[in-house]
Length: 118
Image (cartoon, rainbow, N blue to C red):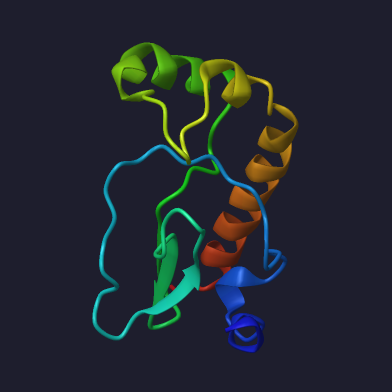
């Protein structure tokens, strides 16, 4: 898929591998005709593209320290011990990833904007 990704305009400037914030207990099957873009060990379908114009993501590029704190506060009961579940401190200690995630989100949105024709 790596070669195919380089041809997808929505992914211009998006690295093949990056670390993103995840908080979900559900997953999905790819819609018919969609192509998988991102996956992780924990979740096979992390992102897809449909007809080079629709993108679906199951991770969060928009997170900040405050939004992570808000999610922890409101969903603390979901923080049960598990292979892919981090502690509160582990999540909050990875603030270094938030800037990169925000930049990736902006790049993705800029790429999406370039596909719009009026």
